[in-house]
Image 1: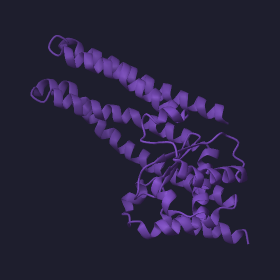
Image 2: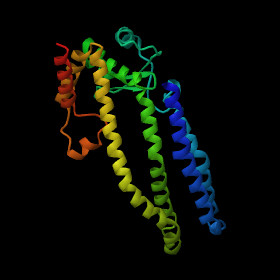
Image 3: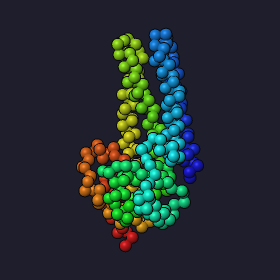
Image 4: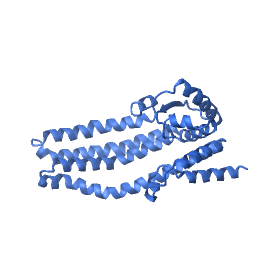
Length: 281
């Protein structure tokens, strides 16, 4: 299962990222070649940017979901303090055993006294200080079980694929903005070089918007699945109690915000858990 998902990520990286980058690099070189003497710095910058910086960033993004220590370079995380470890480690061990999670799981903490949140990254569970401080043991166990659901279903691999699929649009949009600024004072060159990228960005924006809606819907489905995983392993009450607690603090979302959200509405998650609980009676 893990091998096939990793191969899928690599194939997406090659066909969705490397090939478009190489194609854009060729186009840029062909277009900018006549103006190389006029704009050598810009020409060299584009070449370095497309060939070294972006692929390097993509590669780090790819492996950061697998190697937790590398992720610490990009996220403001830390190891649990002794006091936090005394609360969290026993719960992690207990939930891990009951959920039959075979992978080694790392625990990281991020300092935030207002956001009661948790996330799974690769085989790591990340908890906020506010969550540890505000949730009781039953609620914290329910949240941890939910995050173990993401680990069990390898949801980090899915998130990596979504990020890679979005890169081509972001690259073209960035190039369009950059080219328009570079040739802002030269309308003729701007219309020849920057306009095609601008038009392409406008067309791709429609598809990118649809892509965002679809991936957001899939992300919400994965959140429901992680809730189901927690409930199936006996943690529905704790998760429900936690969701009830954060429902009070939730702001009402607009229709567009709900469509774009990676998480379902808290009230809908609670209703799902109620139905799951009723079916087990």
